[in-house]
Amino acid sequence: MQLIKLTEEQLKNICSGINLQRAENYVGKFQNCSIDGAIVKGTIKGNHGDYEVTLDLSTDPIGYKCCCENSKEHFCKHAAALGLTYIYTPWVFASKVKMDRKKLQTTNEIQFFVKTTPLKDLLDELKKADVSLSTLAELTGISVQQISVMVKEDSTGRHHSLTDPLKMSCLFLLEKYA
Image (tube, rainbow, N blue to C red; front, side, top):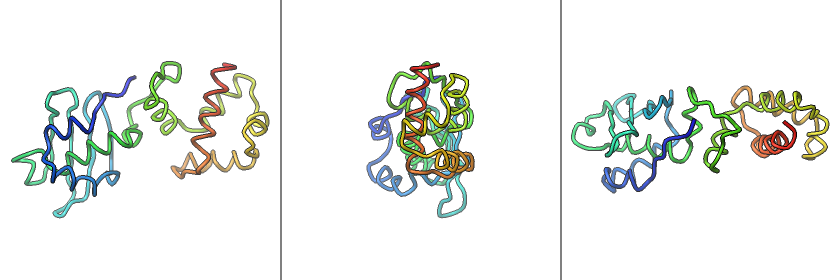
């Protein structure tokens, strides 16, 4: 699966400068984010309750829905914020998107894959390729105990600063040995 491209330029073309500026305060604060095909969804707490926001990235200009009053007149700050969140952190929309590591082509796709693939899954693949955890520890300079802690943290959504570099090491080894 390839991610649908969205750029800040596209948002600038349909959103007022002031709304785009206000949107920056909401970036990364969405709940229940999902992507299904070209439809991006998220919920954000606003001044008057929770707003459900939807973007349709398959249309030009981008289609949008938000339950705030301003969205009836123009592309609101919540819709812009959802777009910016998708641009900057697409992995938070990963609920239905699974990428095949063998088909990764761009750095954005690699980043998305690393952020959405559990470390345990990569370690299981390495094990099948006869690359042991102790070999990975030796190659990366990260102890087996530290890797075990990172696997547990990753499975609960906590993030260690070495998790992504370790996942990249796993990807490299999988390319070499799988």
